[in-house]
Image 1 (cartoon, helix red, strand yellow):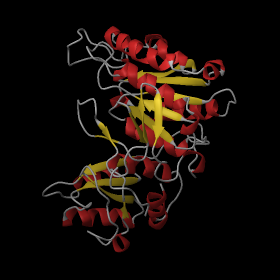
Image 2 (cartoon, rainbow, N blue to C red):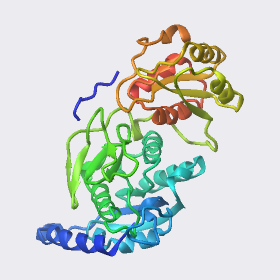
Image 3 (cartoon, rainbow, N blue to C red):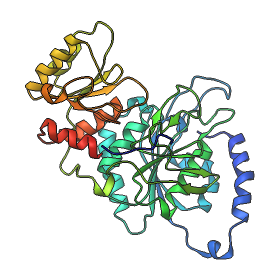
Length: 365
């Protein structure tokens, strides 16, 4: 098992504040730095709150995906002092509607771009709701060591204190930083740099919603000044064994939450609907009722991949701790929460796997 440390979009007001602050950073550049050619960073926009808008700057409700990539780039002109920026619109949706079609398109485009010699890195704008899933998916299928940085916002572009502009600026700074290479897919939000394998959303509305509770931050970025603390957790990107070559569809995997008095009906329904794998968001250390265990074990014996994760926010799911995984044919999710377990399992099931091989993947990735 991998070891982890225990410690571990755009309002005029926000643009104005960013202009004043970043001007000080820019003025401190040396003559040599000013003379050096800027790296090229490609921005791939998918929508989300960072591109959202509301009727009022103090309105809680808003509509995601209202701004296009050109508007996002124009709203943060300071980022052009960090890199030569090119923008492409991959989709313009709220991340609650993120889907396999966009995932496959996004992964293919990133692999195409990072194979180009003139591209130094990629920034992806995304909604916060499913960013951890998209980030982890890309972490497993992007085939480059070049920086791939995702960013998002908790407040829409029209908000009184929108967080999108500075998040975007900092994401460009990280993508343009040569020391970001080889660290896997990164997520930049609220001055923090997270690894794709470690972050999770912890608050429905707070700006500081993203935490990496088990392994801690990859680094920090303050008004474009980047500092890295450590490398990422698990295998990723260029070292990943997963490939999307020839893949047009991902296998179905469902997540089912465990609860008091749970029976096996929802597990049966998932398999009947075509699920090739089931992830249980178990109670405590990945446990579930006796009735649900019997149903899950029945499907495991019939070739359905069955993974035990937990509905608890943090912690490691121990193999053969709460249940006899060896006997039952289950896979322990270890550090993977249910949503990341589903992503990994879907890619793993692109080919036939034994429970032992699946457990290896959850250990290595």
